[in-house]
Image (cartoon, rainbow, N blue to C red; front, top):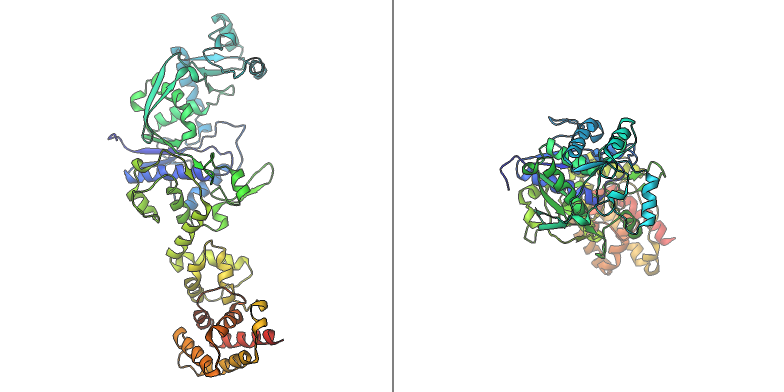
Length: 506
């Protein structure tokens, strides 16, 4: 790696929801920058105004905030290379596009969309490149006088790169090693559109140069664009300043066949966006990992493990640990299959790892949304501590904890009534009398007295344990039953036993 200051960027287009592949690109950029004491820059690539979606930029900012990733420079915090929205940098790009034309590396193209559509109909697999460029209306095929006249009249035109013929272009990818391209396979990409906006190809090169980007991480789907970008760095005289590139492996469908898409998530029942995204045109809501109940720490952890590992069996990493352990050499060239069950495992593990205090507000909101009013914060923290090991997603806290705040509205009677006996009724009637006699109402003491009473009554402990649980919580779930009882408290435990007995014996 060179000695120059590490500066990396994430440059999303504000056109829709943020795919988990995009968030992983953010993460790898961020980890690399922080590992090497560098800067992470957020740049909004909004040059395609036809695809711009209102609210999408704020959504991207909200996603990064939830993920715990803070940009050193961005449209919000600013920086010495502002502005960080490409639409606000529009005047910059024409200068470089015109320079390329003057050098003979680019040209004006006056073809109308209708003319290009006709070419595509007439010529199978048509490419606007060396094979056909002289048959079209551009400054390479038209007389100079006519080109000047069209430009003077303000005729709509684009500027295209002039791809060289019969050349091989190569570069070294930090992940893939030596990569080569044949220029004859690449068309003359548009660099500057008719509205004066640059395309991604020109803007990414100009902005990376002006912002002194040292390393560029992007998905492998951008590999086919690499020869255009390599040539632009060379033609503009900046080859020595070109960032080192790393093309990240794709995140694949669970079966490994093809890139994971939003449709796959909808079909298989899991999110592919970081946060909920509502399509402004259709109103369709696409669920996100946050709203499903993922912790940001778990989301970052699972994304890091999609295509990277530290060479050990460790799977759980905090952000600080990821920064410390991260290295480009450990990124795989092959795509990584997304496994939603594994993703949920990460979340369950992070819920267990989290402090009760850090979970408090999230659980409070979940319970409140389900009509439960929390009056005692200390009690809530005890509840979280006792149930968090049983929760996979944050909404699980409602099912696992709601009975601590309200009595069961119904009971799993089929699990109890078929085997109910008068002896069991007698056992529980006696239990409500002996509970107040305990010196301390805590799990070990209650369990010992419960088992002793069963022995006194000639009943197997197992025959009354399940009914006791159902009396307290309503069903066959929850933590250790004696922990539940002691957290509910002596009087509430007695009330629930007596109430349930009425239902069990009716």
